[in-house]
Image (cartoon, rainbow, N blue to C red; front, side):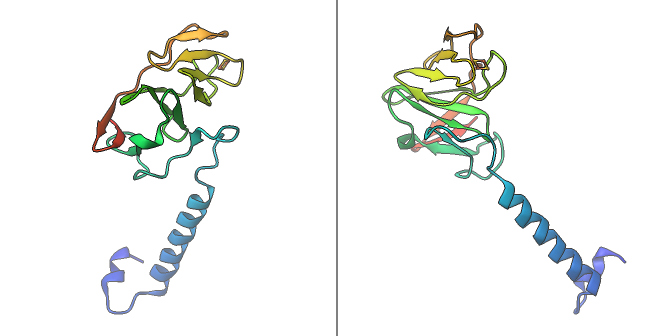
Length: 151
Ligand code: FES
């Protein structure tokens, strides 16, 4: 009847059933994780390299993971990280400012939204083409010891 009975030498039947149930729920949630809209581009990668938390020091990637002149979209964190010039890393919201699609793909200094073909400058986040006119909001990141984390 109460949870503290689990501290006795022999766990009650209910606490064993509850523990198995919790594991089952965790396994089910884990199995479903990362299935968000990430298809269509090899530069979109769900989270998994960090601790699963959004922000507060979650490691997004190694600096070597981000191609020069390109970038990578982190769907779970809602962030696109770019490397517009060697050794310079920038991060922006990956939510397109036109109608909210997730941007996908960064190449040649341009972040692209697949929904209506808006383009954004990978250095500044400024809208450079398509229907979007508002820049992608910049996201604070830290780059330390070859790792990029959300600040
Ligand atoms: S939602 Fe991105 S261009 Fe329309």
